[in-house]
Length: 358
Ligand code: HEC
Ligand code: HEC
Image (cartoon, rainbow, N blue to C red):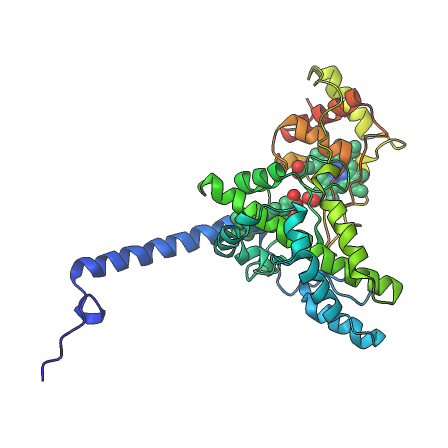
């Protein structure tokens, strides 16, 4: 009996098809090698574990949320898993009337956003958004866990939520000095979609985490309606104030840099040097003393490396110093320094990142 061969498969592949496969395999290997080389500066010892202070709860990314919930139920003998799941569905479910009418997310972007996310982001940030994707354990700093609702590189008031354009900027630019790549090549609409999906994951995650955190603090199960209201308010676009420098940028001359240095070292007003070190190398006396909001050690920036996550735009630096960096030990300095003084400090920091104070 004659069995027709399947065209283009296995040993029957025509030479051009084989060559094409060879080429795509080579492309994959080149891509993988490039990715590894790119991530090399951020690789860490995967066995290093970080613990949250004295607390027995481990750094969030290392413990899946469900386990943390189960731990609470066991410890306090209070059922909470279903309360969180039902509350989450009722207030943040895509079918929930309350959520659909809240205007907190652009609903039509969620599905395409999820597709982009699963393809391009989940490897680091995980499908769930908890920052513990397959690549995460090798990376320093860790990919962001979105489920706490905290973002660092925002143009809003201290503790505020990011504007859509902040997240869009992060996705477009990437984060220099961290493994987060830029996604300039992704069509603009797809970047807007994924931003919306990240916002969605974040507010829903924040609700669930806040339920559990308050339960741990109060040793009882909180009312999901109350917690949902808090999270709705926090994400309300009306509550976000975009911060601009209060005065126009002053002249960036030697006198400004010298004044900036003085403020940088001021023991009463800033103590920048206690974290960033006297010459901004990230080696101050407290450099090793802090963890971030997710329980991982976070070292102050070394300015000599010349990379700023918020980008090189001077007004973004002004804002980081004025409002602080959410989720990090660096607080806001707008009540200790005037607008002009912050510009002097920006100029000093820029001078350090360009090869030492002139
Ligand atoms: C190779 C790993 C990697 C990939 C892929 C990646 N990220 Fe990230 N991302 C990171 C790391 C690491 C950080 C944390 C940087 C830090 O804390 O300084 C981060 C942080 C973020 C932040 C937080 C910024 C802030 O203000 O706190 C957002 C938003 C973000 N990523 C979105 C995305 C999106 C959307 C995608 C996919 C389109 C993506 N990331 C893909 C590694 C990655
Ligand atoms: C309590 C410690 C601490 C103090 C005090 C502190 N910082 Fe920071 N700073 C940090 C840490 C930690 C980071 C890294 C944040 C991150 O990566 O999430 C940082 C980051 C920065 C960045 C980088 C922002 C970017 O986009 O990458 C700048 C600029 C900066 N600090 C300036 C200052 C200045 C100026 C002062 C004083 C007015 C100051 N810091 C005081 C801990 C501190």
